[in-house]
Amino acid sequence: MATRQAVEQFIEQCKGALEFAEQQYKEASTQEHYNDVEFSQAQLTLEQTLNNLDKLSHSANSQQKEELRQMKLQIHQKQNEMILLDH
Image (cartoon, rainbow, N blue to C red; front, side, top):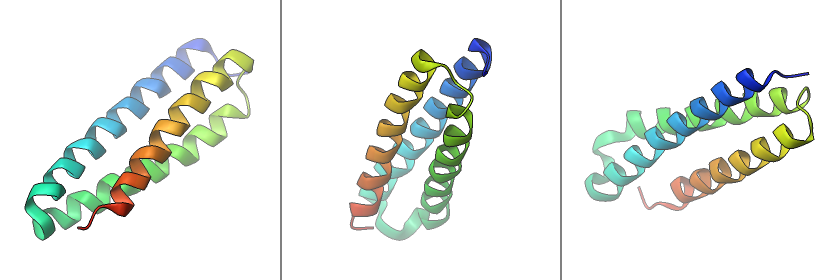
């Protein structure tokens, strides 16, 4: 079973990945192709975070799974926004 502290730390890590992705999304919206490397890195970070989230959710209790599911939805939303951006 995942500890409460491990899940909380991971949620904070997810929030950090989302913040980084949001920054890169905003920059890409205004600068077009000038930050391709950072934009791609943000997408990769989100994907890696999702993979880690799936692993952690296997050992989480039902309440933790719900928290992780909500975080997963936020990450998917940001991924979709980044994919649809005319970058």
